[in-house]
Structure formats: C-alpha cells, structure tokens
Length: 318
Image (cartoon, rainbow, N blue to C red; front, top):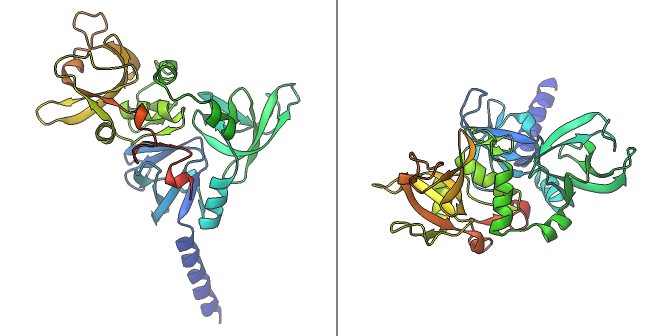
C-alpha cells in the first residue's frame, strides 16, 4: 500500500510539472543562462513581471522562453511557475509600471519601511491600490507574482493604464531616456539599468517606453526599415538605429542610437556618445568605419510582428 501511495505521489508531481508550463519573473532582474548552472554564460535577462513559457527543467533549472523569443535557463527562485489559469490571471490583473531607473518596494507606505525588493525601470507588478503614506507621500500598493506585497513611491511608478496613456514613443523621448543611462556599465547579456550590452541597451531604453524589440543586434536589424549610408549619413534621422559589422559579409555585430549631426549613443565598456565624423574629438575610429546602415523602426511598432508593446505582445495576452 505504501508503495502504491508513493507511486501515486510521484505521478501527481509529474502531472503538476506538466501543467505548470508558464511562469512570471519574480525578482527585479532575472539572469538567463545558456546552460543550467551559475557558471554558464548569461545570454540575456528578463525583468520583474515578465511572463514566460517554461519549456522544461534540467538539473532543477527551468528552461524558459521570453516574450522576445529568447530561450535559456533561470534559477528556480527567479520565476514563479504557474498553470495556464494563474498565468492568465496575472496577465489580466491591473499592473504598475516602474518608471524610475531604480527604486525600492517597502513593507509599509513609508520611506523608513523595511525593504521587500529592489526594482528597476521596466519592472511590472500587480496594482492593488493607491494610499497616502505615513510620511505624507503617495504610494502604490503592489503585489509580486509570488504573492509578496509592498509599497512603491508614486514618484517612481504609475498604474499601467496611466502609463499607457502618457508614455511617449517618439525619437526625442526615447533619446532622452537613453541619455539618462550614459555612464552605465557594459554587462554581457544585460538588458536592465543595472547593466547592458549594446543591443541590451537598445532593448532597455525601449522597454521604458513600453516597446518590445528583438534581443540581439543581428535580430533587430532585419526588422527595421534599412536606411542606406553607403553614400553618407544625410538620410539618417535622430532615433534611427545604427548597425555596425563586417562589410564583406554584412554580419551585424554592434548597434547604437543615432542622435543627429553625426553623433551616436551606444554601449561599449559603458554607455557613451561618439561621432561618425572623422576629426570630431569624439570620433569612434574603431566602430565608425564599420557602419553598415541605419534602421528606422518607430513607425513599425505594432505594424511588424517582431516590434510590439506590453499591450500587444502575445505573451502578455495569454
């Protein structure tokens, strides 16, 4: 009898594992690795509140797929696994968008409250209500995917409906956000204000405007409208992406934002400004000669399947 009960319990766990094939990121920034070990290469990151598909589990590490199609392994504490119903309830619940680059969720509506978690720009939490804090400030009462609750300053976040109505998705606003992260460090695989690689920088900036782009520079390039720069940069506009790489093969290896007047913003070592124009004090002699073309994309948001938003990406609608 004991043996039968044990077998039934194992079967129940198996079926539970099969049923829980969804998840939501439960920490401010979740590292996604190529293999199921801490020492494996970090290939990308996912932000708090991101819905993911769980493809399987290896050595205790869930293998997930993110809304931009990237796959990799995360530590089990990085996500909350859910069945289809719980996943749908999370997606359907009202949200709060973190708009500050960095903030802290407190245990009480008070700056002196205990820390529940750090958060970064682009993180999303369930919205419970808005309260006046003990310290006289306004706070948003929020819930994490795991059920933890806390309070974030109204100055650092806003309800998703309000964010959707007020967020700007034009070149000036996006470049303004990109400039706020000048000096932030290069981190291979990074896609958050804590650090990013070149394409992760693009991805992070756009996420703060509700825009979801493909992860890698080589994936971003083909979904944009190509702007020919073979005869010069006159056709480029501020807000275009610049793609650099191997001219003989056309392979894209680097990406940055075009600011106008030959200036571009990119991340190598750290996020910083450089120039495409020889003789300029900030001329980038290493990358500028490898410019392949520009990529225009703002007019393609929700027009191309690969360029969408938090409100139209299929993972957020399931």
